[in-house]
Length: 437
Image (cartoon, rainbow, N blue to C red):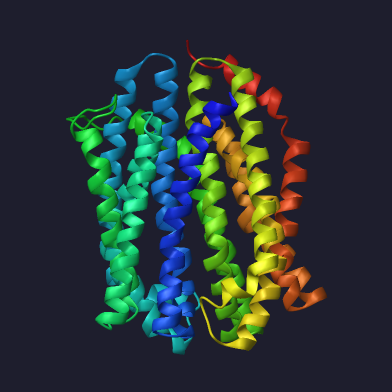
């Protein structure tokens, strides 16, 4: 069981870790090649890019849960049908987002809290990022479907190659060609095209069970994918709302220095968030498969393994940042004052990652066993119900340090509420009793 879990979780976590390096790489090149204002501008846009990621993950997890469930129930034709339908949905969604964000980039960044000093840079970054919505969303989703089709290592390889391309292109565009902030968005988009070129042959050449082909969109299937997948969108949107709420508070209290500090926090911690999400996504096919096979013992074992793994990763990350935090931060900025402020902020903020992993895993688990309403409740608590209240109260009591610790307090409160309100063993048995044989 442990070996099987690790064979999925490790490649998935590594793939997500490497994928998150795209954001960190952008930050390193922008901070050193353009300046701290570029970091702040990208941080303003980050909630939008996270929403894009959330939409792709919504389709990938919703579709993937059904695909793995049907595999577990030996209904492979249904799995293929779902895969083809969600591919159509992703293409339509991506093209629509590109058009909308290119046209309305300027008012969008204003709504997101861009100051006059950051508005032009943020608009430019969002415009070019939106142009590449199609490869960005498809690359994320198809990597997930490779895991559902028993190819987690191929997904990891595709992500590594895309990220390496992003590194090279960022260097060329920013330092050699001097293309400015749009360089980061273009390099990320082209890197995702590389990822797609590696992933697509698996489905085009029918190397697994999933393949492309003609398929009508079935309303019931689409509804089921969205019903299961919406919590994944909310989970990512929750992170987006977390950033948005922090940005608003910081703009009105600390100013652009606070925004730049929070940008550095996000560049560093987005990596650990994506690793934890990778562990969760790695466990999802295993839980969904055993849900289809009606094996509750295996389902709960994989859930517990995911929680333990997430906790170990969170502790390790917190220790690394405590010891090497200033060196890591100095990669993004040479401002000594900003480095000192960011070091304190990062280490307080990192306490949240001792708890976030369990909330992500629990959200995914209820999706995998097709009780998405509980997942939605968890996501709502993480974004709009508990965090804003905790953030404002702690800021009033502890000042700026209250802002940095608010996420940790919020995530811990959610764990306590969820464990008390939803009994996971009973929910598992109830879900299994409703599976159609």
